[in-house]
Amino acid sequence: MPSSTLPVTGNAAARIHPLIIIGALFFIFGFVTWLSSVLIPYLQTACELSSFQSYLVAFAFYISYFVMAAPSAWLLKITGFKKGMSAGLLLVAAGSLLFVPAALYRQYIIFLTGLFIQGAGLAMLQTASNPYVTILGPVESAAKRMSIMGICNGVAGIIAPLILGSVILSDMDGFTAQLQQMNVQEKQAALDALAQKVIAPYLVITVLLLLLAALIYRSPLPEITPEDEAVTDSGEAGGKTIFSFPYLFLGVFTLFLYVGVEVIAGNTIISYGTYQGIPMSAARFFTSFTLMAMLAGYLVGIVLIPRYISQQAALKYSALAGIVFVLAAIFTGGLTSVLFIALLGLANSLMYPAIWPLSIQGLGRFTTTGASLLVMAISGGAILPLAYGQLADSFNEQQAYWLVLPCYIAIWFFAVKGHLAGRKKDVSTQ
Image (cartoon, rainbow, N blue to C red):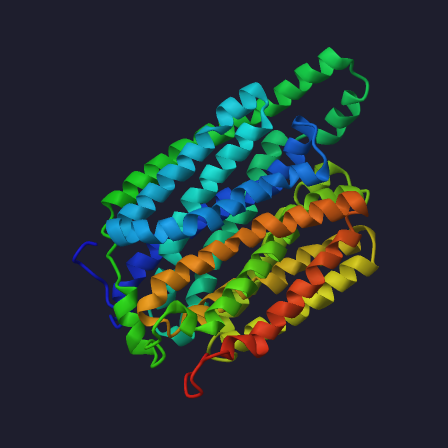
């Protein structure tokens, strides 16, 4: 790892430039990640898929976090953060480029392969950037810094579905109606043309990612030494193994559930809108509504944490809000029900910024290992949406949201009790 390091205890001005660079990376996370909300209904039509099959989009993307998190942590120890981030961006670019042959041949398996490679690149980026933000300053304000990164992520997540949706989902209602009137040859030709709509956007994304990888590589982004610095923040770091920190593993499970419900809220709302009778021409904007709600929550977090409310309390109240909103969505109908799903974005907004620091604080020399485990937990975005798709096929898209309820209850438990498991009594988790 390079010799130049940025100490956690450095002044605020010294930390601003690195945070700006990491903020740009979080923008990329959001942009690439939330494109899947548009890809799911798009590929369901273009590749003639069931609901379960279409949610393999989320599975392929998020399962790569589970596969790549540990190798990413190992690689970062060798390359350092900056080179590792550049390598991650190159992987995301490679996955994006695979969309070209996938679209030309209309092969779902190639789309899924491209999504897996994109996720692998983002796993490397996340393994580096999340502990960077958590450690780069006082632990009690970590959730605030993560909320700022969340704004970068959320703004990109709002923009991405709007841009891609306008290109590949335009007039989808009319197109779907026309398909019913076509013979087999006409239908195949129309679906081929639909699939090829994705080529130009993903070529642009590939080029931009390559440019950003070069810029990051040449940037003055300093290295950090999380293992050494974390020891100064807590007296807990003397554990002999990673298993000395049960709160970490509860945090990993909680993050798994959180990412699952976040992806369900963002990626299912377009299809759920059409299930509720709303035309695709309007429903294609719904993911952006979910992310606008998340953005509002991030802004609240920046103002309130830690001055007025602890990150632990923010997580507790967010989980309670999630319980209320999902029950309201299940027991109402039409646009009202869809809006409650969008409001899950508000409930989810402060969860990621709170779970990370509550889980990683006090790990000391195990910080990088703990971070890789938390990144592996992002694979919840692979498993839970797939389960939602199966329930939607078996019952309906509204009843499938019952899956989300026990997840929010478990998140609430971590906020109230779980984050204290195995901690020394005198250690603050504010």
